[in-house]
Structures are given as C-alpha cells and as structure tokens.
Amino acid sequence: MKLKLSQIVIATISTIVLAGAAQAGDASGTWLRENGESKVKIAPCGEALCGSVVWVKDPKHQGNVGKRVFYDMAPSGDDKWKGKAFNPEDGKTYTGTMTLSGNRLTTAGCVLGGLICRSVSWSRQ
Image 1: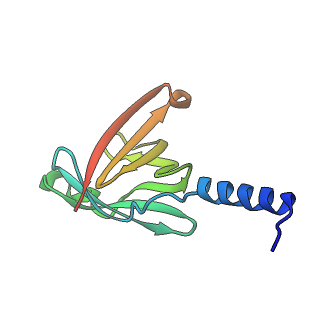
Image 2 (image 1 turned 120 degrees about the vertical axis):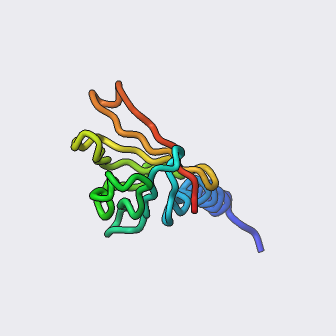
C-alpha cells in the first residue's frame, strides 16, 4: 500500500502535536511544608486544583486548618499550574504558581506582576 506524501506529513505532524501536548502531572494529594509546620491537601475543584490546610504543628495556628490556601490552579504547562495563593500569615491573596517535580511541589505567591515572589517547597506524604 502506497502512502501519499500528504498522508505522511499529516501523520508526522499529528504525532509531534500529540507528543507536545503532554498534560501536567498529578499534584493531588497531601503535602508537608518544608519546615514541617503544616500540611495541605491538593485536590481537583472543577477544572482546576485547590489546596486546603489539613494539619498544623503549632496549636496557635489551629484556626488555619480547613482554610483554602491555593485555588483556581489551572494547568499552565507540563507540571505547572497558575492561580491564586492565600497567605494566612498576612491575610492577603497573591498570584500563585505550583510546580511539580517528582514528589516535590514548589508553590509561590507573587506581587507586582511576578517581580516579587516567595516560594515554599513541599514533600508528598
């Protein structure tokens, strides 16, 4: 069976496009903050991911349990999400990002269009 050049080109382009359309990894689960002070649970919420505090080490911060700290985290590339991050320490909401690398998750909250960011590392539990 002979293939026309146009069929070969279409098949090749389709393969390249599908290979480049890799989806973000699975960031769902429970994550321990690098300082060991808190845990968040990341789970789907609609088309995005959200994260809520599920445990805190210091009883003074017990009021943060149940607070949503990451929301509207939509895929923005391989193993990356963009959305909003709420900081219970200052009560402010920032532009947020999440980046997954194996069993490590890095979250960041940014202001001034991403000029100033603070990141935190998490390990999967």
